[in-house]
Image: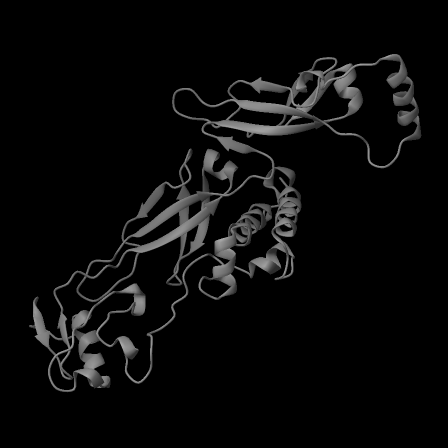
Length: 326
């Protein structure tokens, strides 16, 4: 994935508020529902969500800035610590090797503190099945290190995939690039939830003499530009004009299955909430509902006619909506 700062179009010095604002603008602009004739809209929308997962999380943003994780949030391999030997100053400690394998070593015998290249090759050879006949159990290699070729090799690959709320509800086919560089097409099942894990059998790492590992894919549902998820329910703020609130009328409300009409009664105040039954997140049995909260929005700029009307109204219709606050 591209640099998340580049995706959101912000500077590396951008504040959290600037990042949030940039995400909301781009998410609304590239949302698949607003670009139904654009086949690439879903990919752009997913990229924007992924960038926000990094930069919108203070801890992840710091990790990315320090180079500890990549643009997909995956840890970067830092290599072995120290210098002067293949295992650095912590010569007796195992580190992550190629393909994400983990192994450990213990010192012993002459030259244990200065293992040469041959020792390292012997260890790797035993791990990948190159030293036939050794079987399980500890063996002493050149340089005094001990290793156990019978220890199970973990070939599973863990990864995280970000999906939109619409993709989680309706299902989708997506392509993912794994930490080991492998790319896969993944079928996202209908109704997947955040934190749910999908196992892709036999798609993990490989090593001679071992069956291939699996991919363990954890699903993360990206923040939606206007829906808030509350269990199986959804919540949305609906902007309405002053005259719609006073006079009432029909307004369009977005749902996961397309917009529907909602009748606003006369004299509807900001903060009033309407329930649209069955318009939340679908689920086995009873699905969720959509809760629509009204937010009155005044026109931009100064409106002399509206101000004059309010001046007249203030003198002839006195009331105090805050009287109950003491």
